Length: 330
Image (cartoon, rainbow, N blue to C red; front, side):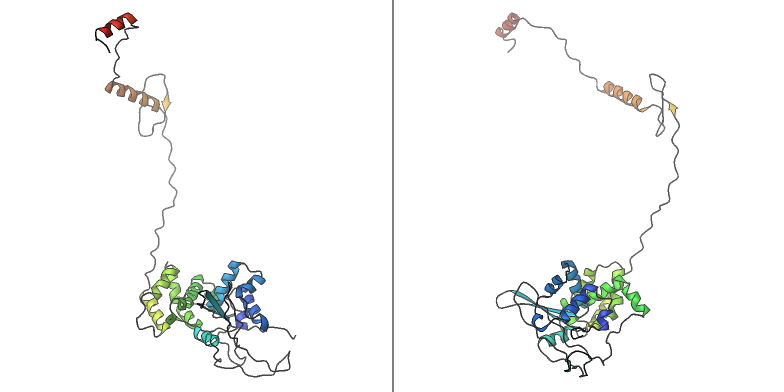
C-alpha cells in the first residue's frame, strides 16, 4: 500500500464530468516528480483516448475548474500553451496565484500518516514550466484541501433536485456557457456556484429557441466602458431584461385523411367511328383521341396549307439553252 493516489468524493461522484475526464485527472495526480511537465495530450494518448474523447475530457475539466490554461507568444514568436491541473475546483484568480508561485491561502493541517512513509505527508504546489514544443505542457495537481474542511460542493447524490438538473441538457449547456464567458472577457469570471445560480435563467433562453452562440453574444456585447463591477449582477440583469418572448406554438396541420372519392362512371363517346366509352374527368362528351383529332381539323381549317404549282416535268437542254441565250433565265 505504499503506492496509491487519493481521490476526493467530489471528483469520483461528479456527474458533470465524463469518465475520461476523471481518469485523465487521476493519472495526472499520480505522476512522479520526473513526469510532471509532459503535454496533457500525451497522457490521453497513453490512455488510448481518441482526439475527440480528449477534447471532451479537456472541456469538462475546464468547465468544472480542474484545468486552467494560458496562451502567450514567446520571444521566438512561437505560441505556447501552459496548463495547470488541480484536484480541487479553482477560480481563475486562485489558479493564477498558484501559477505565479504565490503560497496557498489556507495550508493543509498536519496529521499522522495512515500508511506509507513514516514522515508526515504534505501537500505540494507545482510551479509551471514553459515548454516551446508542439504539445501543451500539463501541470500536476495543486494543493489539496484539508480533510477537516467541509466539502465546498457536496455530492448531489440523494438530492432529487440535483438529479433533475443533471437530466436537463439545456441547464448543463447553460452552466457550461456561463463558465466559459471568462474567455471572452475577464470581467465576466464566474465561480461554479455563481454559474449554477444563473444557469436556470440562461437555460430558459435555450428553451425558447435561442442558439447558444446568440446567447453568448447577448451577454458579452457592448460591455460598460468602465468595466463590470459584479459579474453575477451584470449577467443576471441582462438575462432578465433581454429575455426573449416564448416561442409561439406552431399551427398543427390537419392530418385527418380525406374521404375517398369514387371514380366517374363510364359514358359513350359522341365522336365519329366505332362505338366506344370513356371515363370523363370534368364533364367531357368526347374521349381524348376524338378531341385531339377535332383540334387538328380545326387548326387545318384556320391555317390551310399552301398549294404548290404543278410540276411541268423535265426540260430539254436545248430549250433551257435557248431561254438562257434570250436572257429569260439566268
